[in-house]
Amino acid sequence: MVIEHVVILIRSISAFVLLLIITRFLGKQTLSNMNFHEFVTAVILGAIAANFAFNEKIQIGHLLISLAVFTFTSYALSKIVIKNRKVRMWTEGTPTILIEGGNILEENLKKNHLTLDTLNQMLRQKDIFDYGEIEYALLEINGKISVMKKKEYQNVTLKDLRKGSKDVGQFPIELVMDGQLLEGNLKVNNIPPEWVTDKLTARGKQLEDVFYAVKGSNGQLYIDFYHDKISHPIDIE
Image (cartoon, rainbow, N blue to C red):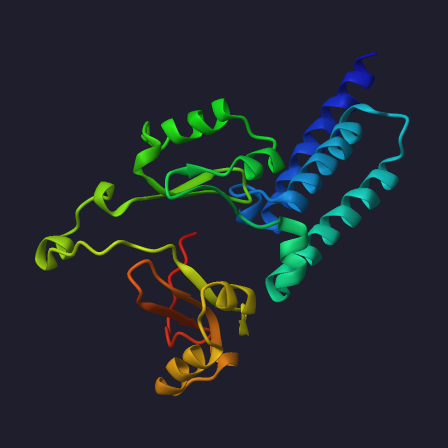
């Protein structure tokens, strides 16, 4: 009886250590903004680790093989989604607009199985109690909500005080991602592709050089290139 307890103790500690190693291997994204495939991986790995700790009928070798397969599958998929936007959209989904111009989009609430009570709670956690303050509210792929307030309800910055700007902000428009034009966004917002390419040409760059480009709420174009010319990037360990 004592031997059995010792075996379970050793297996439990081993399962914990294995999960810790796997989590470190898969990266920080698994801990913070968990998406669909990472959630599935976490559930499966947790179940395997639990069996590894307590189910003596299952051979340890089989459990280790399962852990290795799911770990490397998740790792490979995480690398693929970085390179391929279509795969990323399929596995992770896309943000959903819940509120636009202070108006609730009921159909989008239904599609995401959200009630008004849940939406109100999420908004209160953002210190928002009045729908009239909201320009856009999005449900992110990690299940959290992001809110862009109307211009008159946004916090005043030093730039606002200097310029006294009262322009109505627009929702940021993503134009380029991973070196590819987002033609759907361009078409909906009546932005010709030539406008983007001309902006890049003026900077001596090509579309393939662009990692991400977005037209901000202030109408300014923000471009991030693959090579940022940062010789010593900071990485906080």
